[in-house]
Length: 324
Image (tube, rainbow, N blue to C red):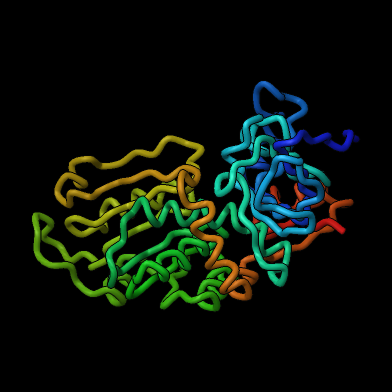
């Protein structure tokens, strides 16, 4: 649908959107018909990068032409693209009552727009890493080599993980994980995860659990299928941590008696309370590595095709919409 160009006030900034990533949740929103109170007409797009187009008279710190990323959770008219009044799959977004260090962060002009638009999902991934509290030298296993899993791979590496294994069912995803920096990968359709992790991470010290278990410190579920937490619950050594960042669409049954023996810590990760701009500097510094996460770049005039591509299982990894 066509909408009018927003009008800004003295305390506002108008952004010209230059790129916006498509998230898995966007496919869910289109499937269920939108988010209340905007059912049937929910503005989509919550992974933006933009250029400052207009600056209110009372705004300090930003100038026309600045390249910026956005904290989409802090807009005062609701979550950008996730039920709020605006979405970033549109040429213009207005940031009202801009506060320095809260809503926007400037980035250098050499970072490609589509890579800059990874800032939001990479913040999601970094929050998951932070929630699992990895120690320097940790051994990590990530289930799921989609954008969040790959972002977590980069996050764990920055936190000092000694060895990171990525597990998936698609060979091309595993190849991408190795390219981005995984120490090893496991194809769970052709390899036994427990056996391979024992080979890669060694045997854990003795505990209440008597059988051999991998000496893996942190597991991350970025896949969202029941077999992942179920597998970890019978693999985890005493004191290991399992982080859940994936969305599980069905209830998951777990053996609490078995988990009791390992004292497995399970943590949950949602959004990015503090990480949205924490990840920005790393993207700026290593943008060529982050660019490998993107599989498709679709022009804005084909945004509906981009949404359809992103919601088709196996058709694409990370889709970004780019504006002229």
